[in-house]
Image 1 (tube, rainbow, N blue to C red):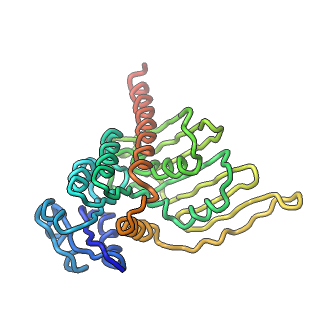
Image 2: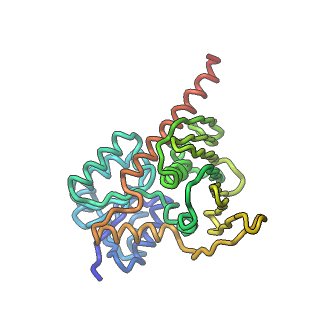
Image 3: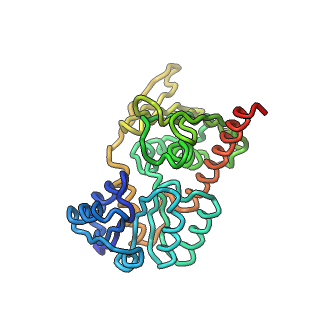
Length: 313
């Protein structure tokens, strides 16, 4: 089986997980690391048998594909440089800060015939596959994504940090344009919002209620989908799920069979296979740009409300 030369830019919290998984991949040769913290980069490189590169140019010359796990404000410039050099790119979410930047990366990937995948890792959670097997026509969706304060990614608000995962999933599940949005949120420990709720109405009649917080005592990552013939409840974190139906005039529940697995490993392996086989990724730049556009619209609604509250106007 052919292998692809792959590397990592950014060795923060998530980048270290990327490094471990790439080093274990049967489809990739982990060749290069680039990070401004040269000491940390060398430590990871020595651990996994990769090389530390001194510049982006040197890095690009050593890889066919790269994962970008740097802070969000740097995604556009790094992604643009790598795609311009004809490199396949897996970039962490959100894809960029602005929708126009995301669309430019999508166009650049198309121009250079490169794979552009975005790290909406929950799409690779086994529970989502179980949900899709039983999905018909969702009428109401409720999701909760709560966590303790992360002390990272706080340069963006919780909508772009956490809710964007659920927005991308819900857009995928519903498959209909958003008709209207109601949103509330507020900062607690950060400059941007730390807790938020959005209620989305879709043109096909489906409604989604999405709640996120990064100031919660414990982690919660759940989604419930109500449709005409069933109610499906899933736990992303524990990778468990149940489906409730009416059977013989009575409510009956069934535990879903879910083959557990590490979502990030599945995501990275899928990216590598897309690069080798030249197939469209599950979450391409196009899907990520749509989720970003919706997340920005929600963020703007929350910011406008916060400003009104402060000024009393």
